[in-house]
Length: 333
Image (cartoon, rainbow, N blue to C red; front, top):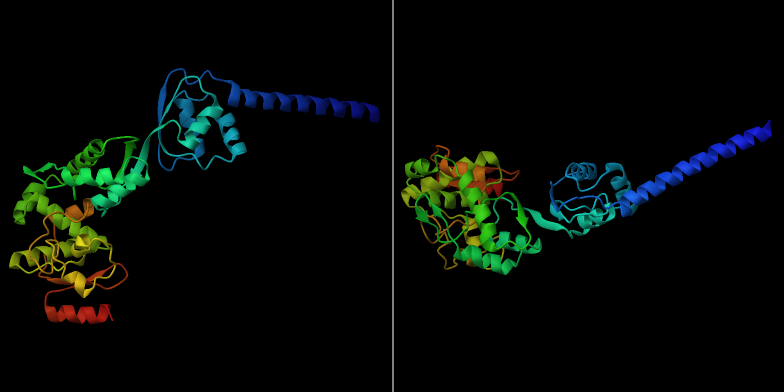
């Protein structure tokens, strides 16, 4: 009886071993030997934040690989499930799953990258980010942004500062500065509120000047609710010819970043020094997002002329200098 059990156990073990061997060989073939796919040159866009399972499923749908399970097993064995880069890829015909995975991890087949431009970035900061992402030379981009322009409501801008819309873009590797600027400025024109021209006229500014106001709001505001209020202060001061005295505009003029301005900084000889010069700066000081554009075109209706940051992401506002000085004493001890 025990002999029969031993024979049965050996047979089961042998069968299991055979099945495992067949599975290993099948995985090895699908991973390294099968080159039927893709049948033609195939492009695939991998969205930011995609899980590896979602990526594998998309590659199957696009006809780049044949099997999700073997692709995931291969990635797990290589410890590469979490290092696949998002972007746009172009795969040559007849690649093994191993080659496809290598291209995703190394970026070898990548033809475009996702690049996020945050709200409030200056043209120089955008150029630097594009350079770090390997899209091109930061210096070349900065120079191109400075000498390029677009027409906004019939008026040509002096540069692209303020008109490169903050968003996430899929940018081709090796794209020219003109191509990239074109994408961002077209997005700006799409996002610009439809009532921009009418609202700007009602506020006695041009659309380009309203964008300058939006850039000031973008760099000054720390909460959504304060944006229309800061806009109100700016327009109220413009109306009575009072200097804006906005620190962010001076920071823009400085050759270096300064988190705290000195008395010497306040004396800098620049048209962006809104302590010395009344009116708006000659150009925007950053690239504002939609909330700041909306605030610049729809300011709150107040009589406020002052504001000061009071912590916790909020500013406090005042109509008189005495009120403002009391707020400063309370908020900036």
